[in-house]
Length: 132
Image (spheres, rainbow, N blue to C red):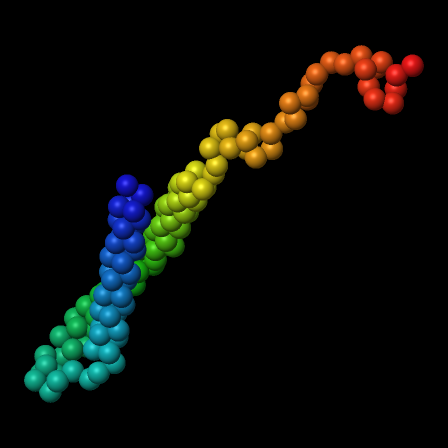
């Protein structure tokens, strides 16, 4: 289940990055178009080349730049969520491996068994070397 969640988070990060790169490409193309002189056929319409096309290009640059600025904060958030999911997966795997390698409950007592006389009550007179 956690792997599916991780895959979803990474997919969201990839989708967000592709959107940002696409918007950046549109901005670059619009800036190049603004920096290039218009074709001679369009110069016959001065209002189009002096007012309309430059303003349209500027609007495209501003709009896609705004999208980039709005969405850029989502990428680190998605990556942080992916790290949280990866941490959960690692903790679950470590617990599973620890439980697999841990000895059974009675194994520790068998390895460190007590002496049969442990806890036995004796009288002082019965101890060797202490008798009167």
